[in-house]
Length: 257
Image (tube, rainbow, N blue to C red; front, side, top):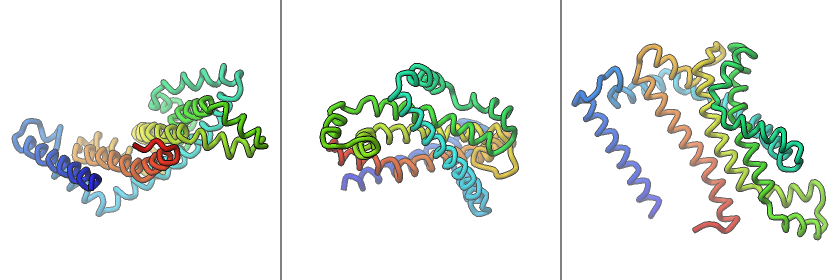
């Protein structure tokens, strides 16, 4: 009952936002060139979906995102493990990880263009660089925060090597891993949008390209429509993937309120 009431309140809120936006538009509070009518935005989305442009761009973006995100997760997990287990790695690679984590993803775009040109590899490089550092920090924190008693108890019962890490240490770090994956997903989204806006290639136009061309053509209905699609996709992925994982861990660790 609580969930249904919450969804109803959310729907009513967005309906209210729609009507307030439309009323302010009709009152000519702002120029139509700057902020179009919400009806114009949804008309653009309807025609883009009907022509197939929106679905093709979404698929191209998701394909790039999954490849770069997956590569960044694997690389970040390995890097985080090295930083947590070896002092020399923490004193060298750990410092680099912290430094690169503070660097905005868009800063990698000029470097990727110089190295890879206007290619898919340039986009993948930007996405990986936006993903790997947050995942590495999450994994390193997870390994460092494992209670020592877990390892001693497992060794007392005969667990060693791969069995110790796979059956004891890895489950103990899962809350940190999920948190790192969720944060890395957000960084990967931002990185890819920056890459698609600045890297123009002919192998496929993604959502970032539609956003860029909407700006070039002063088509604000297209710009706001694509922004709306990006927000909705982010919310859907969070609800369908990361929220169930977090709820499972909360039940498994007994932290459900």
